[in-house]
Amino acid sequence: MKLARAFAALVIACLAVLGCIQAVTLEVKEGNSTCIKAELSASFSITYNTSSSTRTVQVPLPDSATVDSGSSSCGTDDSSPWLVAAFGPGHALRLSFATDGSQYSVATLALQYNLSDSSYFPDANSSEVVTVVSTSVGIWATINTTYRCMSPTTFRVDGATVTFSAMRLEAYMPGNDLSPTESVCMADKASTTAPTTTAATTTTAAPSPAPPGTPERGTYSVNNGNGTVCLLAQMGLQFNISYVSKSQNKTVQDLVNLTPNLTSSSGSCEASRATLVLTQEQTTTLSFTFTLNSTTSRYHLSGIALLANWSDMTAPFSVSNIGLDYLRSTLGRSYMCNAEQTLVVEPTLSLNTFRLQVQPFGVTTNQFATAEECQMDQDQMLIPIIVGAALAGLVLIVLIAYLIGRKRSHAGYQTI
Ligand SMILES: *[C@@H]1O[C@H](CO)[C@@H](O)[C@H](O)[C@H]1NC(C)=O
Ligand SMILES: *[C@@H]1O[C@H](CO)[C@@H](O)[C@H](O)[C@H]1NC(C)=O
Ligand SMILES: *[C@@H]1O[C@H](CO)[C@@H](O)[C@H](O)[C@H]1NC(C)=O
Ligand SMILES: *[C@@H]1O[C@H](CO)[C@@H](O)[C@H](O)[C@H]1NC(C)=O
Ligand SMILES: *[C@@H]1O[C@H](CO)[C@@H](O)[C@H](O)[C@H]1NC(C)=O
Ligand SMILES: *[C@@H]1O[C@H](CO)[C@@H](O)[C@H](O)[C@H]1NC(C)=O
Ligand SMILES: *[C@@H]1O[C@H](CO)[C@@H](O)[C@H](O)[C@H]1NC(C)=O
Ligand SMILES: *[C@@H]1O[C@H](CO)[C@@H](O)[C@H](O)[C@H]1NC(C)=O
Ligand SMILES: *[C@@H]1O[C@H](CO)[C@@H](O)[C@H](O)[C@H]1NC(C)=O
Ligand SMILES: *[C@@H]1O[C@H](CO)[C@@H](O)[C@H](O)[C@H]1NC(C)=O
Ligand SMILES: *[C@@H]1O[C@H](CO)[C@@H](O)[C@H](O)[C@H]1NC(C)=O
Image 1 (cartoon, rainbow, N blue to C red):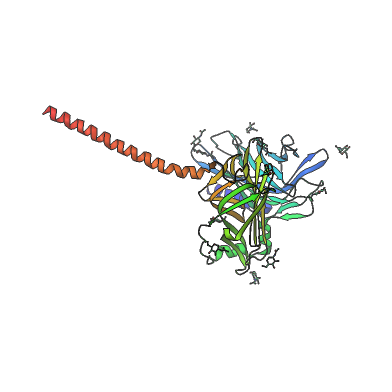
Image 2 (image 1 turned 45 degrees about the vertical axis):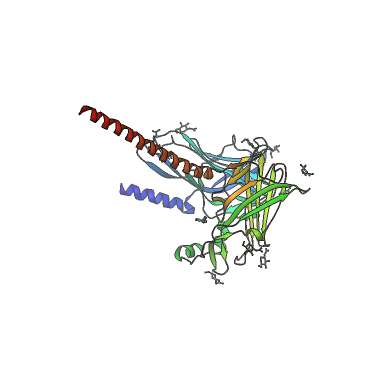
């Protein structure tokens, strides 16, 4: 029993070490030309139910994984390119890609697993084929370059996690082989420019500066060529950013508020794409890209990019993700979220938004249209209703108890 457990621990430890995970090469072709190529190692951590408990297993992407040519494709004008790697009986790793012409990114990361496979999922009490999906992955690169990330990077995909390592990947390929120019991921950059980062952050509890408090709410807008307002936004913005600090000579995690009265807004409005660019004093440029799906008449925040050159940074900070799916709403409505919301852009950057209202499409008469509110606001409005209902229930119970009590005591008098 003990031996088995030690062996399991060894297998897991082994999986965690790079060399032990198998590297696979996957290629999607159309005719004779390759459009997606990936060399990577992947492992999945999956939690499932047995009849008596829940169990978590580590499943590596085996080197027997093959590209499923039926569901993989190079994409067309209307559909995204897909790389689907199938393995075992009904398991698959799926990646879809998106591009804006200058960058490409992983738009969807999905994992499909078949709980009937008892070699991976012993004693599972279900035989379902489960698919979990994430649409904010943060893998992106300049077009005609190869995305490279040697560091292990973990993505949460619903209840499961996917860890990639030793990854080289390209979509929308100009040739049949990976481009020699590479877009290196942040994790690799951090580990080469600051090799002591992890040691420093785990061993010393550096005195962190006082948190900056809730940011002030700014009002921003974008004008059309002819001067009419086409995009409206109001929000308080806070960066949660990790960069290499000049003064502390290590990677720091910092919270920084955007100051509205030092910030100017610009941008552009097109039929199905609107951009809001916020610039603070030549040192910070933050852009939001909204996309409208004209078939469904729904829009969402699809991209965030930040370029920052702050005085304490050893190098300018640049992060962008065009595969996001936040702030979903309907054409002709605005999107509102008074509660604090966190928009994760990349592991090194997330944005906290406060008292947010935006309308990137269909603005008329310089005013916000009716708002669709985020779930958090709706939940917060529910609390007083629930409390009120509970109080009303309590009053009713007391009243009924009182009435029953009175009736009983009347009955009591009659028998005497
Ligand atoms: C693919 O390559 C083969 C052999 O090089 C050639 O015969 C064939 O015509 C090519 N097909 C296309 C679609 O280019
Ligand atoms: C396990 O079972 C519980 C209770 O039925 C359910 O809520 C949970 O989602 C299940 N977990 C998985 C991973 O299927
Ligand atoms: C599987 O087990 C969980 C508890 O571990 C239980 O809640 C669930 O109902 C079971 N599902 C089936 C299909 O038996
Ligand atoms: C799931 O696994 C079972 C047993 O290995 C197999 O019979 C079944 O066809 C698989 N399902 C899919 C969708 O491949
Ligand atoms: C990418 O490379 C292809 C072929 O070399 C070229 O036609 C295209 O313009 C390049 N795209 C960019 C954005 O550089
Ligand atoms: C301004 O341009 C937009 C489209 O570019 C148009 O819909 C709108 O009517 C124009 N407004 C005025 C006042 O010309
Ligand atoms: C900032 O980001 C870090 C790492 O992602 C997270 O642990 C922390 O809770 C975040 N802080 C705030 C205030 O959002
Ligand atoms: C920063 O840290 C590195 C590694 O700890 C060290 O080699 C370097 O001298 C330090 N630089 C400064 C300016 O303190
Ligand atoms: C910006 O606003 C703050 C507080 O509201 C004020 O103290 C500061 O003077 C303002 N700065 C400018 C440049 O207007
Ligand atoms: C619009 O939404 C539909 C339905 O969700 C989807 O099939 C389609 O691909 C979307 N179009 C674009 C351009 O994203
Ligand atoms: C960043 O700021 C420093 C001074 O603060 C300046 O010397 C440098 O040129 C800036 N870098 C970029 C890329 O703008």
